[in-house]
Length: 83
Image 1 (cartoon, rainbow, N blue to C red):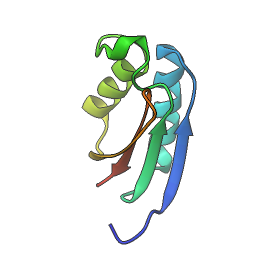
Image 2 (spheres, rainbow, N blue to C red; image 1 turned 60 degrees about the vertical axis):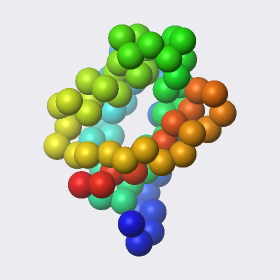
Image 3 (cartoon, rainbow, N blue to C red; image 1 turned 180 degrees about the vertical axis):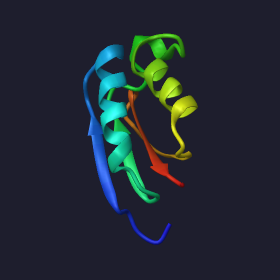
Image 4 (cartoon, rainbow, N blue to C red; image 1 turned 90 degrees about the vertical axis):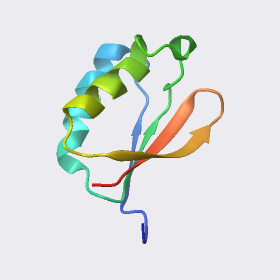
């Protein structure tokens, strides 16, 4: 990655809000974009609940691939769109 192209911050706290936000963001993402999920590890970091569930579902549906980037505190996580 030569440089960061854009940053999207998602801070909605709830599964449905995350799903809608990620669906909306998808059309704006490009390789090099960063996505920061403020509440990624909320709900005791369970894969079947909340923001983490929404993110994993988004990954399964999206044409984009993402690489782990930075952990922020105990709950936040960022990813870089790699194409």
